Image (cartoon, rainbow, N blue to C red; front, side, top):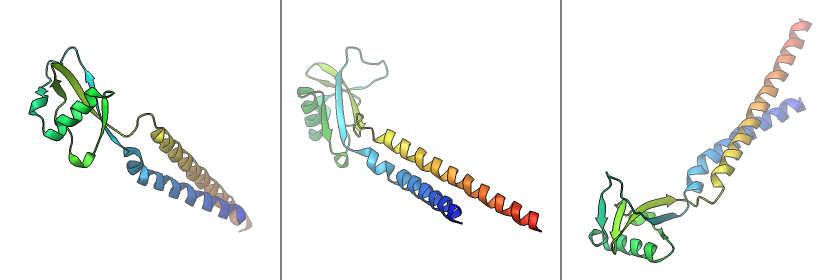
Length: 144
């Protein structure tokens, strides 16, 4: 009976833990939004290049800060994105990308590991439960 309860508890914890990680993963994986600018020597044929003067004031300030800084600037996702993929600023064309989260963080790998561990725990304990119930069914059948 104790073994049956142990397998049942492992199953519940495995399913609940996996569900919790899956449910909270989008919130934990988002993190900061960063505008990354990279100077390009050749613009792709189908790309539209927007002059920095034609951007909104906020977008232009973000591009200027990123270009004059280290090539990136943290942005507020609530204020809206820069609606351009290529911007000409002071004669140079820059490729703009918004990066969500911190790619150096191992958050995604940790979530994957947690889901795998919880899933394996749930599957293993479910198999243990099935095995115990099958053995109990066989004993009852042999007695009859």
